[in-house]
Length: 239
Image (cartoon, rainbow, N blue to C red; front, side, top):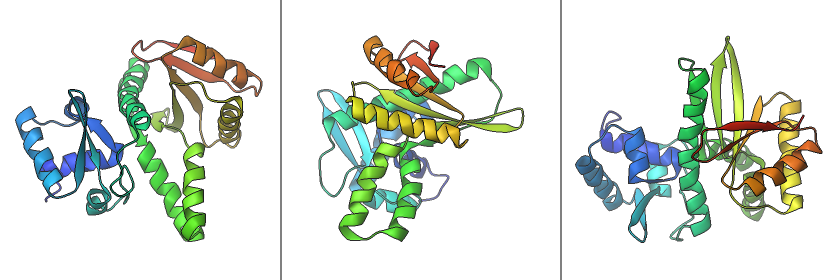
């Protein structure tokens, strides 16, 4: 496939995001529904993607073979022939929507500034590359599992006054245990302290969860920006 081919561009898109609905694909790729359907069929026949159907909705996800064909991230959405975890799948699909909303929100204030998305898979690929050089076997698998809890759901990098600001986003749909939340918030506080990120933004759909996060963040003097899914309205909590 040529890089200018829509089917190749579709595979690239699925490699970056891992899993997407057809609507999410069309929002990001200029392609007709008919050609999208044909491209998806071609990629599935090649073993580069698989399709998950829940009721009347379809979601398409990258396989290891498909990711290795692109040659950048080199890992599939799931391991081997496993079925996607339903809770993780729903989280990832909502995360795709959260990325779009987060960009729209930034564009309200900074309509023309240069902006770049770094997806969870792209963050993981960089971390995995480092781990692959340090560990082997069961130790590598363990460290890869651990590192998943030490990354955001995605970054948005925006250039303002010749300075690149890195904003970490966390999609918080369920209430974490206090220990799990404190561990993540301490990690964010450390990232900010060292200047590796500029701002932390939590995306939520339940006010009780955002309040729970805010209370724990305030104990660490960690300032967090919050916005509710579907509202594009922000509020700050913490000092």
